[in-house]
Amino acid sequence: MSASPLPQLRLSAPPLSGRIDTAVTLSTVARLVASGVAVSKADLVAAAGLARTTVSTAVDELLARGVLRPDGTRPTAGRGRPADRLALSPRGGHVLLADVGARGAHLAVADLRQQVLAHTHVDIDVKDGPDPVLREVETGLTALRAQVPGGVPVRALVIGLPGPVDGQLGIPVRPPIMPGWHAYPVEARLRTVFACPVILENDVNLRALGEARALPADQAPLLFVKVGTGIGGGLITREGTLHHGADGAAGDIGHIRVRGAPDIACVCGNVGCIEAVASANAIAQRLDTAAVARPGDTVAVGRQGDTVAVGRPGDTVAPEAMTVADVRALIARGDPTALGLVREAAALIGEVVATLVHFYNPARVTLGGSVTAASDELLAGVRSVVYQRALPLATRNLVLTNSVLGEYAGLAGAMVLGIERVLSAEEIGALGQSRK
Ligand SMILES: [Zn+2]
Image (cartoon, rainbow, N blue to C red; front, side):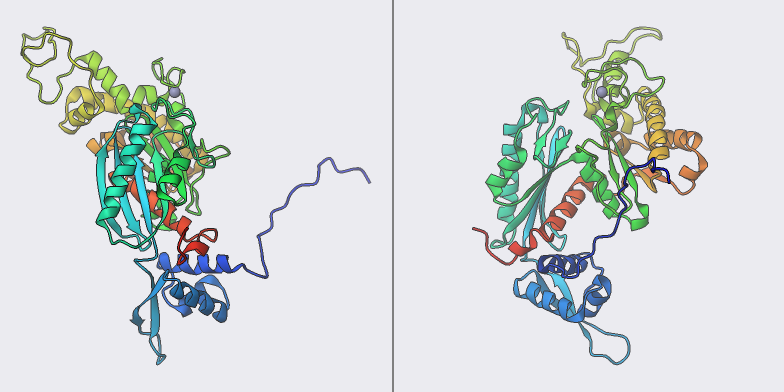
């Protein structure tokens, strides 16, 4: 008998535990109620696959701790007595949410029933560095808390940042557009301020998760591509969870180089990255070169063929550089030069998306970000390249569309992470008990 040429291989086996931990049971029951999958003890027995007495004990415990509350009755089939309905209690805990973009942050307070109790938008500039930006976020969240019912503890805080993050360490990792943020202890700072668990996540990952959970389960795997100031991606697995990769860098698609792209220098130090040639920033720079009038500008009209300087009447200095907001406004009002650049960007982004579609075979590709919000031009361009380039099996059932949640996708993803964290087996033990 000759020796096998192969080493011993690991075969997968589903985890199975004869004695299920109480915290796991409490977490499962609370999450099934929170998701609306099961709202009575009978539903829970069927959905969780647990014994009736186990479910009953867990429900009583969650009622006693104020996590669940009775929510009326509902008729049962046949002549049975109506079943008691269960719901998450509005006083079980609050989650604080912060979706921080390059120039602004959406902040919100929500309860465990997914009710947004208060929300606001604050102007920030991540280039100002971590201390002033986080101070703004802390002040904003504290002000929102003052607007909602008191006496309910904060159980988790979720913050998204527009750059790569290490979720385990709770720090940004060399974020290209965020000077001063590298390795800043974001998670530790917020945990100290709000005395609750803090989750740090990349902003596009939050959008991807929010989008996927707002859609039916068959819309995953879902690939979210954000085209705004920069370009980023987020991937939701078929099971509906975020794919982080080994170090949390999965989905960071902005620095993929695309065939035929001009050799424009990127913030990352390479040339020809998709972000450097097709983002709103890239379009703004090319519009600067093209000297297009900004919204609100009065432009002197010369003879055909004249070179027209752009600026406000009386300007003696060179006009300011075009901003991303200017680009959005130009696209929205149908400026032909701007739309031409969006079409060029769409063709390049389409190449990247076609490659990713081959690799991941997503059920849905969602486009989001300021450029997609301003016009359908980008979606149309990306669609045409993807359907032309990707093979039929990968596109047969592919849905390629704009975000359904728009600018609130990030808050939605943060809410999902926050509530799931609070109801996790690790954290649920703290519910109904006051924190010291
Ligand atoms: Zn790059």
